[in-house]
Length: 356
Image (cartoon, rainbow, N blue to C red; front, side):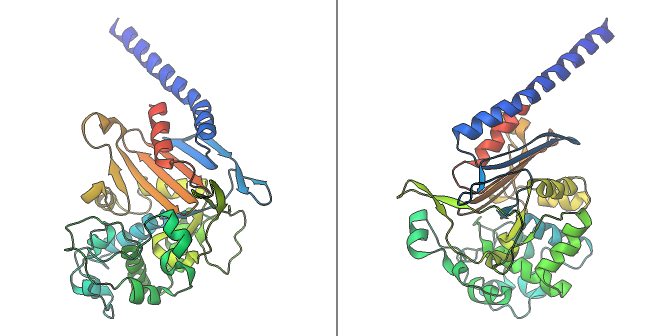
């Protein structure tokens, strides 16, 4: 009798899981229409792709539709690749996470040089003045978005914009600062003696077969790259993104990719193909603002523990991206978009709730 009851329970559980998965396409379609989503969604549960679809236009001027192969500016998802590269060197005893910036960049000019550790750069507690000062869309339209309207080398960016005085005591306050990861990029270049772009190719993109990913720069023509558009509240309509040099984000946000490649990277991360479990545990240990190394860890308390997840966002004007990896369910949600019309975090969270 007990065996029969167990079989019935397992059957009901399988039926329930299948029913929930079967609801996903209609839920995602309805959400996309209601929230004006424009982009691509890819979902993997365990080893199986359970959803892969795209919506809207990759280029509005020429009415080019988005496809599942469309490539997007993925912005700060770049930071997770940078964090992995640092942790790989940590595993090789080439970097001590508790050592100061100046240990690896002796020529660094900023006050933080002998006060801020590699770990504090990784978890955005460096205390340095922020490289980004734009507070609103209105400000960006009127005044631009800082130094990104002029091309700079990484050396110039670190010297001119990532060497400001400390604004807070290192380790005491979370402040999301692109400058932290630009410094990490320069440390990588110094230790590898090659460009950040080449390091990413050699250590991550080529080994994982991520052929539709790379770093953007103004002098490249990138096939299948979606144009990006942001909502001008004063005009009540989408407009093309402001002209910027995306290479200026370097190790903090200069990557482009597609949903399949982003999924490949995070699958490799959690399958321990890029770093060891001890390093992954460091990466996923939440500190201030629930932030680890390049990612947030949310849903760690109370009833939300069911949805414990790693979150990684990317956003530059109309270019938006999000990756959720549900740690208790082994499910990864990748959403890439070329507009800022939709709250992608809310989208990914609701996909999780529909799935479990």
